[in-house]
Image: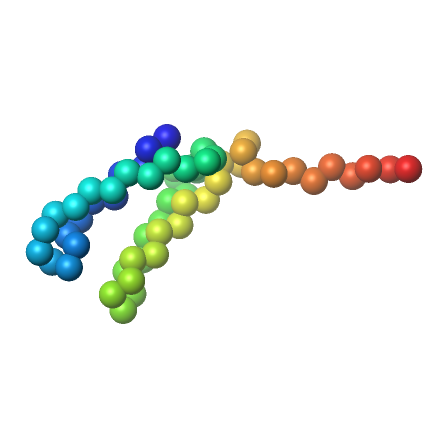
Length: 58
């Protein structure tokens, strides 16, 4: 999956950035916030790719 981010860097030039993630993203849960000049993007893992804990009994 290749998420695409595009917009204006410093209000001068348009930019586009591509980043490959090491896991599958849950597209329905993607969120972004812009606060005090900082863009925060949340890309939660898809449930099927989350690490699992397996109980080991002795």
